[in-house]
Every structure is written in structure tokens, then in C-alpha cells.
Length: 218
Image (cartoon, rainbow, N blue to C red; front, side, top):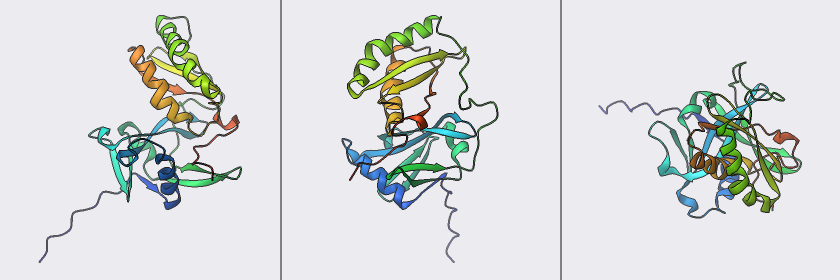
């Protein structure tokens, strides 16, 4: 008699075929595309829904406790801290003003204490950490994203070292704003200001001209 088959772990996140195709289309513009996974992370809350970071990074960079899923030729990594917040969700495609964009259908909701829509984070700009972050933004970040019509401003730094940023111009509502934040702005701030523990985007992206992660236009 054959031994019983081992239980197959249930995926944290379901990815529809349409979402997979849209992500692969976006990934194809990246260098060494086939070695890149789509990383997902909860980065905050907007009212009673979570907001997310999505970016491309080598699948080999996933942490030992991150959730790594394989959907044919696409690997998806849910970072450890976001697994319980994303578990049971579905990454799908929706129509936004005639353009196909990724949408997260998530049954999980943020705790009431999370930062809500329209709320300002607690903290101020009159401290050494804030000064250091502003210097990085002024000298490294904004000169780069200004070439694409964007700007990043520091809203506050709280007592735990969390920096709250607001994107504007071409970055507000940009479909790749979270990629810009995760791969560019956050890296620059963390490298330049070791005292910063996290970076949170409080931009009202839904009010921007292009508020969704989109594939290339056909």
C-alpha cells in the first residue's frame, strides 16, 4: 500500500489567471524578469480596508518564513508580517476607467486602531530623525522622481521611528507608486537614516489620475 500523501499547504493568496497574466506583462519590462517574484505586503489601512505594497524582487531574496507560492511561471511572495492579514484573499483584475488593474479582494479588515482615511499620523517634523529624512528626500529622492513629475514629502515621524510620506504630482494615483515607494524611496531612507523603522504611504491615491497598478497599455 502506498503511504498517504502529505498534505499540500494551502496558499495564503489566490491569484486569478487574469491577474497572473497582468503581472507577467508588467514583469516583462524588468531586467532578468524570470528570476523575479511579485512581493506583497500590507503597508497600512484606508478606512476599513488594507493598503498594499507590490513590487518585483528576486524570489531568492524571500525570507525563510515568508510565504512563497508558485503560479505556473510566476512566483508570489507574501512577507511574513502580512501573511495573516492577507490569508484567504484573492488577487484579481478589475476595470478602472477602461484600463485593467490589479485589485485585492480581502476578507480581512484592519483593527479599529489602524490609520484611517483622512486621519493624520501622530508625530512632528521637529526632531533629528525628521530632519534626516527630509534631507534624504530633498537630496536623493525628489530630484529623481521629479523627472517623472512626482514628489515625496514627509508628513510626520512618530515616536517609534515610523516615517509617514505623502506622494504628489505624478506619483499620486500612479499605478506603480507602491513600487517606487518600496524599491526607491524606502531603500534610500532606510539606508540614509538607520533610526527609521518603517515607511508608510498616507497618500490618497484614489484621488489621483491613475489610482491602480496597471499593466502596459495596448
